[in-house]
Structures are given as structure tokens and as C-alpha cells.
Image: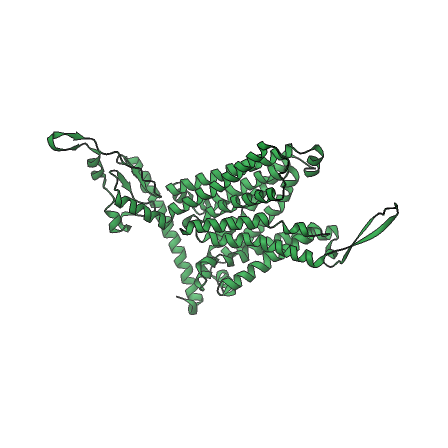
Length: 490
């Protein structure tokens, strides 16, 4: 199986973890939200990332220290983006408060998916070359559009479900419905929740340092999570502390019983004491936290398989979250009693999201070395009688001899496009060209015009400049590591 599709499976597993993490919290009794959220968060944002990174990566603490020395801005921005993501997660609750679960999730996650996928390549300057300048990039955009459609369908299914609820149930689920407030908060939540995607992109120097210190390629993303999630922990810790002080709930961490005032069977007001299952509460909170962390554990693994299109990991992640959270809703019978129309909408949403992950995965395969290799094999076996333009990320002097043999000059194309004379002066029109479906390859049935050639040359030049800049940045980082930590140089 190509590595790209293994990466898609990793992202599915991450989505399963994210869609499942809240289930253990259902077994926590007599604790306020801020108590069990902070207890689980300490596991998901502090213990799990550092313990697993320490076990699976090499020289974790020297890696973080080296990254701070050679590129302190990358570490700082990773932390700040983690805090930004934490704000997005907290405001997500307000989105549910004003819009309800279904509409709120559709709006917030729609923003988060699109922005988290597109903003990293836009800010890195790769959007016009890697995405708009290649066939694989356009397929990736198509997959993102399908994902957005799937989110919309899932949101429509949820809205249809809410319409079918009784008036009492509606008031209970959305007590403070406000479309204007909800849209504003959902926009803020979607923008800030994409901070995780920004943080993963900004933390690449940490992954480089981890690789330098000997970490296997599959695990180089784990040290990044240590920094980013520490930022997320900071935001959540501050907010939970505010709630604990406001509500006076700190004692719940240690209480063995819970006292409640109420009337007994005879109508006498009395104080009743309920035992608090502290060990069980801590266990299920920790289990929820560990499950939550596993989404980004698998995310970091899947990201290593995505090649140049690492940014598309966010699309796969968000689609997988909604798929598995919806399946959990079905398993927990949350959709019981809804109409056939609502269930069809939900099924269409899940199917569309699943299809989007396959399209995005295929676009990554098109852009991978394996995809381009299959392109060259196809062209050698069935050379088209058309003009072939080199892959967008290659120049003529960089191609192999095998590739040179399959590329025609403009003159050859013009000659091949003319009628061919055979014996008896019989004229036969040239064979219609076959479409070349491969990634990064453009074929036309005529020579490119001067304007088209100029545009193509400009795109190639931009891609080459970006490649050189990225290579230079990587060499500079490697050189700094060699200078500061010479005993670890390779």
C-alpha cells in the first residue's frame, strides 16, 4: 500500500479517537465540568505527550533545547498557536450554547477545516505553485470542497433532527438561541481552533531537530506536540482556574461524599450524602484525556506520510472527526425516532466526508514520488503524440535521461500535429491524443502559445525559487545544529 494511504488510515484512527474521547466522561459522577475537564486535560496536554514522546523519540529534551537554540521563533509560535487553539476549543462551547449542537458544529468546523487547510500554504507562499499550479493541487482543493459539503450535510441533518424534537426538548437543548451571536462566536471558534494546524506547520524545525538526534521518521512529530499542547494546556488551565475560583469547586478534587438538601419520602427537609467515586472519576477522566491525545498522536504519524501536501492532513483529520462522532451518535441512539429524511441526510453527510478523505488521499498520491513514477512508466509505454510539459517542480536540466526521451520539443509537436503522408499520397490525420491523468503533468493537443508558455515558465520559476528557499532553510538549520551540537552531527 502506498505510504499516502497508510497516512489516511492514521488520520482515520485519529478521527476515531477524537470522536470517542468524550464517552468516558459520561461515567464521571458528581464532578463539575471544570474539575473533570482539567483532570482529563492534564493527561491529554501534559502527561501523554511528554511520556510518549520520551519513549518513542530519541533525545527528547536535547531536541527541544536544540530547537530553542537554533530557531526560538518556531518554538515560540508553536506555543502561541497552541494557546490560540485552546481559545478556539473553549469558545466552541459558546457556539453550542447559541446555535445548538448541529448548526454550531457545522459552522465552526466548516471554518476550522477550510482555514486550517489553506492558511499554512498561503502564508508559506506555496499556494499558487503547489496547489493552483499542479493537477494534484486542484484535486486536493476538490477534496476540501467535498469535505465542506459533507460538513454542511451533517449540519443539515442535525438541524432537521432538532426541528423534529418537542418544544420542551428544544428549549432544554438551546436555552439561549441567538443566530447573530452564534455566528460571531462560531467564526471566532473556527478561526482560533485552526491554530493547531498553524502550530503543526510552525513547529517543523522541532521535527527537523528530532530527526537530527536520531528519531525515526514516523515519530518526529511527537516532540512538536509537547510544545503545542503545552500552549493549549495554558489556556485551558487559566479558564478552568477562573471557573474553580468563581464556583468554589476546588474541594471536589478531594471530596469523598457529596451533600444535597432535599425532602425525603415523608416530606421532611434533610441533608443527604452521596459517596463520590473518586478513583473511578479520576480513571475515566484520565482515559478520556488519553483518548483525546491519541487523535494528535495519530495525526503526527499521518502527517509524515503526506509528502509535500502536509497541510491536507487537517482536512483528513476534521472529516474523520465528524464521521466517527456521528457514528457514535448512532451507536448511542441519539438519532432514534428521527424521520427517514433526517437519517438520509446524515448518511449522505457521512458518505460524502468519507469520500472526501479518499479524494484528498489520492491527490497526495498523485503528488508523491510513487505517483510521479507511475506517470513516467505510463508515458514510456504509451507515449502520447502531444506536447508534454515537465512536472511543475522540475526543470529540463534536472530530469533524467529516461524522462528526456519522453519530452517533445515545440518543433516536434508542430510536426507531429501535421497530417502524415503515407504511400500513395494517402493522408491520415494524426491519432487523437490520450489524456494523461497523472499528477503534475500537463498535455495539450497543440503547442503552448507564448502567453501560456510565459505563465507556465513563471509558475515553474516560482516553484523552483520556493524549493531553493526551503532547501536553504533546511541546510541552514542543519548547519546550526552541526555547529551547536557537533557530537551529534551525521
